[in-house]
Image (cartoon, rainbow, N blue to C red; front, side, top):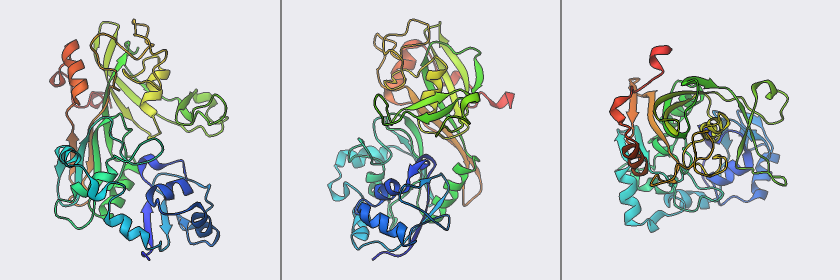
Length: 351
């Protein structure tokens, strides 16, 4: 049996059912075992009893009782690849390292690689490849936040439980600052602003899409069941006439698909976004249709460009910057946008 564990809910794990969260992290657990732990009070959320269907929130601490012997074996063989990791995957994930010290590893996550396993994500993901990121340490590094599968950019991992807790708290309390770069259809007006539409899951009923977020007007958030407030700052950095623009996006809150849903609601979906991209036809300047056509890649053009945070051990304020992925580099070159022509933080002068 393993010992008692306390795990902090990550930034992008909020609003997940407790049983689903638990089985994602510990796949050997059955639903019956989870129900029993809840019923007997062994499984606790922020010190209190909880039900399997309880919705957990970012930053909450989950007390997990000793688990069956299968769990240590699961941890020794990183799920789900372990010794079956391909040499090409090891090379890929190690080449993605932006920066590391004895406390933190930062990756430039490639697009198309999920952060964690889950519904429809397959078995190849960052969490399953962390054994290749141990670099002589005895424990695998731990994800402290996530990026969508098709979003690239800065992704942090902690090398100790202490650092993982500190970084999770930093994300929860919003002392970190993330700036994303995106190519979007059309040109937002005004060129700098704040989007405050709430977000609610699309639903699993007939005609619903439980993986898609629906925007809710600010005046309707409080009376819409399940809706959560969400805030995004945006700034246009450059434009291709009225056809497309290069935007910087800062998620003030951290809701699922927030940037993608907010830009689509603004009428300027992110290029290559098949889920939120409107008609899917070529954009002719009216802001709808997330494909630009021609030789522009149909992959999602959303990149976590930089992450600023306080190092949990040294307390030094750090900013890590990730180069654009190949498909976005090609787009930037094609339309004549240059990375060095824009400020690192276009919002700094107006704050």
